[in-house]
Length: 407
Image (cartoon, rainbow, N blue to C red; front, side):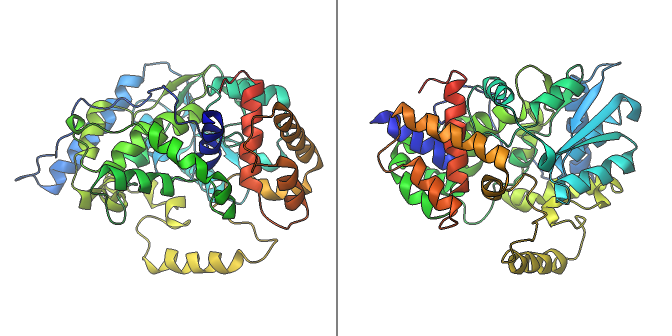
């Protein structure tokens, strides 16, 4: 049944691939940036001019700016850019996540350094209500996984009047997806995309394999006329960024600005050479050239070290993290959201909320026969298997259906 394949695809990827929304403002054509006879200084200045122009187009005098601030590069670039147009007193940042995580702690350091206020929302103390989850689902077009979005109740209360400035698309247009051996054919790129973006990473993926053909049929294919220099970037922008990231980072009901989502800026960064994009090499060089003090602060992308840290330091920390993950009481600072798997066992209120969604979903009789919520729940509670992500997907599906989603 088609509905079964669609459900399996959603659970596998974390979003619906048949979503028609198009948030990404692609340039009409992407061409290689002409760098013949161009010095590095000129290229960096070009990037700066295009970046500030994009910010300027979304800014107006007297605007109250709200920046969701993480420990990464993109939101920091947005914040630093806005400070070239307005005073720190006109900007409020907020950070949601788990205390101790890179996102949560580094964001606070950046805000203090730049002199802007930072309101922190600890998710380990946040209690979701069914009413809030249903409204969140509606505001994201019932489109993607629940519990990775900003806590709507508090954001609505504290920041509803401001203009929300997002780092949306920063990684995608500056080379984060230019990695490994690049695909040479669409078939290779599609398989690579689905494998890389799979949300379910453990053996539960075997329960979802019948959804792969559906996913392949519903991937939006980048056209040759658009001129993408890598197929990876085309598939990411047309699919994951349009259908997954945009709906849940830019919830409806707020006024949003996304300066990376600018056709001219996008054409520039996407038109750089693969060597300049790989590992976001040029983008990182640009940020350190443009705002050296701001980007000398730690970043989550480098495991909590500054961008210019010796390469052995994050490598050593990565090995340390790999060792520590075998200890149950260790909190991984890379994880900015609560541990869904553990919350399903140790948080009675949250456990009750999610279990009721699974029971209601089962009663709909729409799941494939191999997906048995009661069995998944029991095995998870007995710690016989970690079905946390699959249960999260199933609960998200039921919340979307309650909120009006039509399959």
